[in-house]
Length: 282
Image 1 (spheres, rainbow, N blue to C red):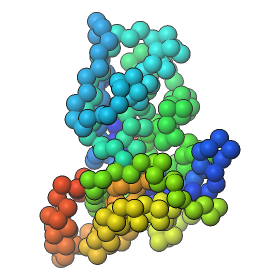
Image 2 (cartoon, one colour):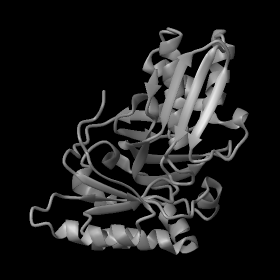
Image 3 (cartoon, rainbow, N blue to C red):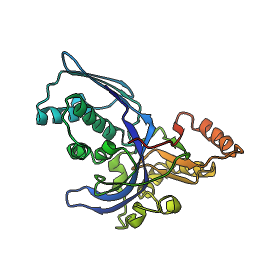
């Protein structure tokens, strides 16, 4: 079977508090982006094999979240390891797009189907939670209001159909540790905005990490400014960075196209996606 682990963006991200275990509680809106995805093929085989293509994953194979997920399921559910895994990495690292978490979640989905484990989405989400805070979201893969470390999820209605999204990632990435190192915790979350009135209040959906990351990586703040100058009605850094995205309305007179053409030529090596939202997948 072949799956396409997609990425996500964040509408707003507020760091609410630091927990006793060292992690941070946050509030955010996760939005799946299906147009940018990795490729994961898992099929029965005579021996176990793992083949990786695309962007180089700079870690030992056993530290890859796909392999960690397989090891966890194989041990817990006594699965044989006679499978072949082919993985192509397209979602960049240090981008705030959750690519690794999506890979792990989709591996869990593949194993559940391949070995007929019969696990529900809720059970799968619980299984992958220890692999990464974003992993449970990718099990559901629809817009969700997230609390806790990002694992407490409430699906929400979010109508972005017809909205054009442009995503730009600079060459430099941002590590999660770097982003958290200078974060100022105000204790303010999204409140009721997290579950209703989103599109009418987008100006209130700010990302706390921008205050930390922009001074360290000025190009990221510049990309956000340029997206707004090009006509985006909302622009933000995703997660802890470094990808920045902008939402654009349809412009019949083509003025947006002209401005974006200039922007995309300038940042040609950085543009990840220029696509239009369709229907959410069930």
